[in-house]
Length: 333
Image 1 (spheres, rainbow, N blue to C red):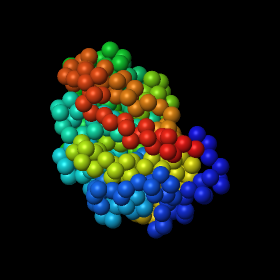
Image 2 (image 1 turned 180 degrees about the vertical axis):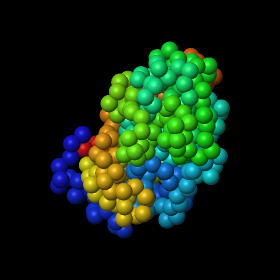
Image 3 (image 1 turned 90 degrees about the horizontal axis):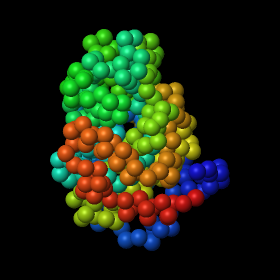
Image 4 (image 1 turned 60 degrees about the vertical axis):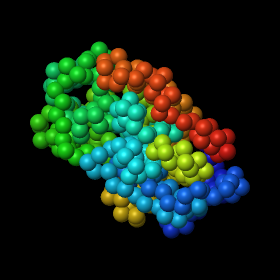
């Protein structure tokens, strides 16, 4: 979806303390949110920049208390399902164990594809070569473990029997295990890939931005606590609007967003942040069907026994596309 410079400036003011994304007429006509406080996961990776960028817009949407909850030893969806946060943008793999286990998590939208690269040692040239190898993950059942299991199942490797999983204790541990030579592979999230490449260790055997079929599906998706969605539908839609408009800004103004992240102290160096933002299709939410992503991975995971629920049950039990469909029409360029 292409926008002119004039259209962007009409809908977004300067990045900083002022509102970044403008305020739609539909939003102005809606009732205020049922609750003034919203808690969002502070993402540990650059690719989920829309969650950070949405803060000022959340105020325009009527939220007066905006809190960010850090995710260091647990995934964002797990924290949301526990009721300690309301919204998260996280990789799709982390959602399946929660939905399959009946946890109160609802997937609301997909945002972008890609952002993950599978690094391997010189002993591994293809995904099939991973059979019998040691693979580092942040924790068994976390998003990287589940997502890689889906990839392995797709090429005929049983992730329960054919891989030696090495789990860390923090989300960043898998990268360190790979750099120390203790494992044969790990799945990186932006900006980890840039750090590993800079050290010249290993090589990429799969890039989810460009390699099919994984490039066809969403990586990061928006999810929320099911009770929050049920009890506060107006707040849910308003929060969704803020995040989706932030994703549009990431797609159209990556250099300004990278500067915003640096100015706000979100750790990522400007050059790396810019490269991440420029490389990801943040406008994918407008074009692709998020249900296809859940169906694709759920089928693989169900076939190898990683989840008990069938793809239709995962979709019926863990999704709500109402707000996305309404906002696609409202925010249509």
